[in-house]
Image (cartoon, rainbow, N blue to C red; front, side, top):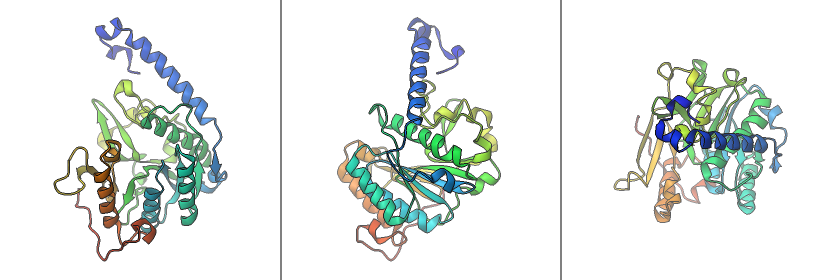
Length: 305
């Protein structure tokens, strides 16, 4: 919740500080219960395997095709990273498909515990990140770690951990007033800089902060954003003439984010066309299984941001 001095008279009249405080306590209790739950399957030795390494964790959700595409692209362009699939899928059949993709690519896989309630997507995603931090990353003590959305793809050789040699965090910057945080779909951390922090990758909607913004109090407010480098980021229509709001893609440097808003908005034809175009951008450098049997002799390069 916000500091008490940020609540105005109308907020107090409506008892918002009280309701916000109660809801925050409930969210915190739910998170603590969730991170203590056991995984539903997959590799139980990940903390040991990631020690001292640079770890790239993707949060999978009900989409094996996009994980297939990402696994191929990461293997091609970020081969030095220890890539892990943390599966937050809600459907058991779809989770088995994601697990099969992980097996085919020889990628470590863990099936996350089911959230205590269905809730909404951003909250479930935050719980998935918190569980992974508490049960895999923190006990594993890697050199560095990063989180990706499952629809974010490297399109050229890149080391997203390189900037961490000069600073403790790196990623795509988001701001809300005087506060800032790293977008949870593209964020990287030097482990020794955050290992003693009580990280919270959830939302803090009462401050206007989306998933990952829960780290404002424990981490980001202690850092000067003016002294940090962030990933150059821009949104653009996925093709000329497409709706720039509903049918956009996002570039984070050389990384391409499909942006699931198109599909969530029910624009299924546009979503399918967007994915076809993303496969074309990735081809021929990703595995044929991710191209749906297609091929290509050239690939589009992202413009400099």
